[in-house]
Length: 505
Image 1 (cartoon, rainbow, N blue to C red):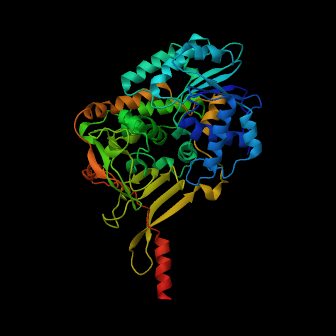
Image 2 (cartoon, rainbow, N blue to C red; image 1 turned 180 degrees about the vertical axis):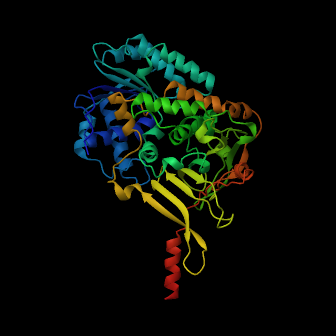
Image 3 (cartoon, rainbow, N blue to C red; image 1 turned 90 degrees about the horizontal axis):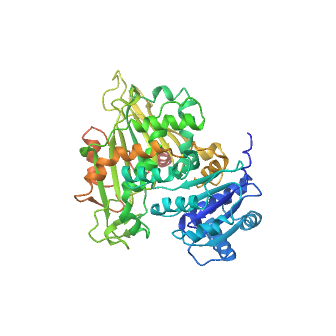
C-alpha cells in the first residue's frame, strides 16, 4: 500500500477558534493527520476569535481539550493517549489572533500574517460565512498569485432554504472562483460513506442487484439517543430537517443512488452525484412526518422533553424528528421509494442504509418469507450485514432467516478517525471530490422546499424520549405495506442457540 503524499505547506486559518467545532473535531483531526505524517513541516495554524487569548493560552486550551477527549472512551476522538512529540509539533504551529470577524481591522491584521498557500476555515455560525469571505476579499486574501492557492471552507448548513443558499453562493462566487470554495459535509469524510463507491462499483456481486429490478425500497437512518445537549437556541433556528436532511442524508443518498462516474476524478464523481440529486422529486405533502421528543426514559435514565430544554421556547413547534419519502426520477430507481429519517432522543444511536429486496419472483416458499436485506452500518460497529433465507435443519423444506456480517475492524487496522481528517487533507491537496458543488447544495433544498413551507404551521407529533419516534413515521411506511428496520439491536440468534444447547446439556 502506497503511503499518502505529504500535503503542501500552507497556513490554515480557523475562524471561530474558541468554539466547540475547533476544539472537539478540527484539532483532533489535525492531531490524527500529524500522527499519519502527512502534514508539511511548513504548515501553520492561526486561530481567530473574539476570546481574550494569547498564543500560549490558546495552546493550553487546545492541549487540555485533546488530552481530556483522548481519555474519554465516549468521545469521538479515540486516540487513547496523546503522544508528547506529536502534540509539541502541533503546539509549535499554533498562533492566535484576537479579533472580531465583523470588524475590518481583523482582516487587516490577518493579511499581515499570510504568505503563500492559505486555507480559511469558517467554523462559525452560517450568518458569518459571507461576511468572512467579504472581509478576506477586501484585503486581497482570496487572490491567487505566484502559484499559491487560496481556499475557503464553508460548514453546513449552507443556507436555510433554496433562496438563501443561492444568495450565499452568489456572494461567495463574486469573491472567489468555484474551485476555491470547499462546501464541507463531515459525513462525506466517514470511511464507511466513502466506501459505498467501492462496494458498488468494484463488486459485480452487488451492482447488478442495485436497481428497481431487484430492490423494493431503500431506508437511510440517522438516529441519536442524545438530545439538543445545550444547543437549544441553535436548534430553535434549525430543527432536525435543516440540520440533517439536505446535507448529511442527501449526501448519503447521492452515494447510494448515483450512476457509475466516468472515472474516479473530482469532476466525474461530482457530476454523477449532481445528476442524481437533480432527479430527486419535491416531497409530497402526504410524504412528510415531523415529531418532537417529549419526556421519557433513555437507557434507564429519565429525560426531559424538548420544550423543557434550556434555550427552547416552551411552546416550540420545531421538529426534533423528520421522516420523508422520496422518489428519484431515473430509470434505475423508477418505483423504488427512498425513506429518510433522523431524530434525537431515540432508542438507539444508529446511522445506516438498508436496501430491502423484492420477494423471490417464483414464490415457491409462500408470501410470508422474511425479505432479503443488505444493511450498511455507517457509525458504531461499522460494516455490512446481509440477511437472507436458508433451509432449516430437519425433514422437509422449511426455511429460516440467517445473517452474515462484515466488520470493518476485523479486516483493517484501527486508525483513529473523526471524519474531518480526510476532508482537511483533501482540501490541502486540492481534491474537491469529497466536497459539495453548488448544484448538489441547491437540489436537496429544492426537494425539501415543500416540507419547509408546510411546517411553517401546525404542530409536530410528540414522541416519548427513548422511543423509535412518532407513530406517524410508522404509518408513512405501513400504508405502503412496509416497515422501518428496527432501531433496537438485532437479536443474536447464535447466542440464543448456544444457551439452548447449554440448557439441554
